Amino acid sequence: MPHADAGDIARMLAGRIGQLVHELLPNGRREGVEWRCGSVAGERGHSLSVHLAGRKSGVFCDFATGEGGDALDLVAAVLFRGGKAAAIAWARRWLGLGDGPVPATQRRQAADTRAADDADVERRRALAQALWLAAAPRLAGTPVDDYLAGRGIALAELGRQPRALRYHPALWCQEVGAKLPAMVAAITDGNGEHSATHRTFLARRRDGVWTKAPLRDAKKSLGQVRSGSIRIWRGASARSLRDAPQGDSVALAEGIETALSVALIYPELRVLSAVSVGNMMAIALPPAISTVYLICDNDGANPDTARALQRAVDRFAGEGRAVKLARSPIGSDMNDLLQAAE
Image (tube, rainbow, N blue to C red; front, top):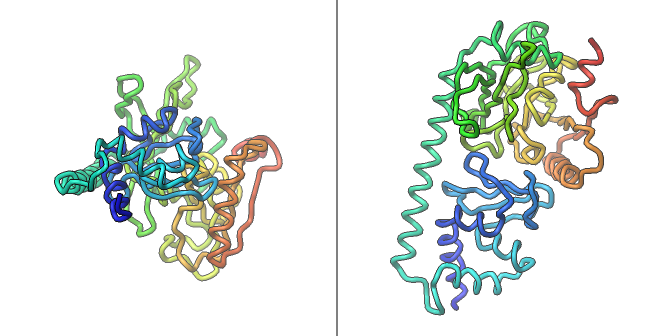
């Protein structure tokens, strides 16, 4: 087979990426426009991300190891330990191409699929933004306020509510087939554009306390999460991330609750929520940011977490920034430290 066909095969695989990931990585699950699992070995987790739509359809990245590539590279990594020739032969059989060149009609079909995926990405982005805009901007007196207070997070102590956070009284939850109240957060890309919306579904216990809803995963995202962040706190400068003063610092936490806890403990710091530890290394920061604090959970010797953190350290250090790891001296995370200080 001519080597030039490899690109066509990768594009055709990308056109059927939904089916492909189910076969290659059946233990993974869809999160927005990505398929997530632990690694190319296929275990459950979040370190490996495969784009399911748009111009990056089929592109994968293992945040823990740094491995990545297109859909054909994914086949090679999962099935053949990186062997490209064997991956090409397998992909041709899977696509039903036989031994001849890739037909022009199938090339056009792949291009049409890519165009349709681009439209789907934009549709999801628009839906994500509309969802956030439909939520109430004021949190005081809402179940979100009560839920956060139950975690020791008193928004009133910050002096102002983070603009990225909102409350929606009734969002559709596919898992339970009903509408639930939710904390809604805007995920912003490196250009300051709204790229996705994060939802934390809430439920009220019999004793009246608001907590995360008892779901398989109470936290879900709609839209393009990778490289985006939830902008929680502007720190001492009170300026936007884009207009951060030269030499400014930023703290990158994983979840919203941890990020809010850091903002309350260290209000002088600019604080962002990366949504996941694997996404920390992908967040785009302006050149003015000279120091990055990576807020780590005390989750033991989890190798995936350790690799993801190292990738973030290497990435930001490679950009010439000072990188520091910060952990709570007690409990599992900074929220435990905040609650202990009450």
